[in-house]
Length: 287
Image (cartoon, rainbow, N blue to C red):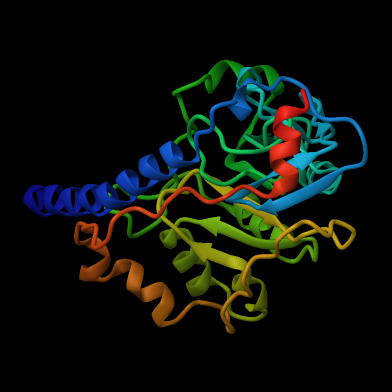
């Protein structure tokens, strides 16, 4: 049993090496002479999500308060608590609907003051429409800030072999994902494959909302929320449509296959850095 566990852990570790390498290359490629992370304030004027989540920026960002009705924003020192007004409304609505005085939603990174590439942790989150929401709930704002400083994440809800959920998953986590998925403002949710599989197995009636849950590496203690482009933001690039169906079939099964566990090997050189939208270049230098 111990040898089997070690083998599974090794497979899981190796399967992510290629992803990590690609992510590091992408982050390096997206670095620019004037670092977006050095900009400390949003731009003035109307809000606009520009470009895509992985190659974009944000004009006229709004600031998410550190605490609100039903939620607390942690790790404020990162200065990633800015978003499109539509994203802030979504967070506020979610807190009012689901949050309780002793069970607060923990909000992680949104975007930088003007969006753009970050120096760590994310390749996306660039145009003000992405936010990470931790799946465990906080008993109080103070407890959340003290328990989860930089480098100390909330506990994973997925077993070490990546095949099933563990203690900590419950009705509150399911309700959070279902509420987000059924919100017409939300485009998709990135979540661990084991969590998606658990929901595919447990949901017996209305399974349509599972469509928006997209399995991805990691995401075992938080959900990555991505909103649709606001209709008024003409410079926002919409994501490709999601595949038809609820995603509970062969698409999900692949994540638990031998192929998925094999270390990925680069088959081609990394792509050159994407050219930022012209509006982002202007926004970067206007500070």
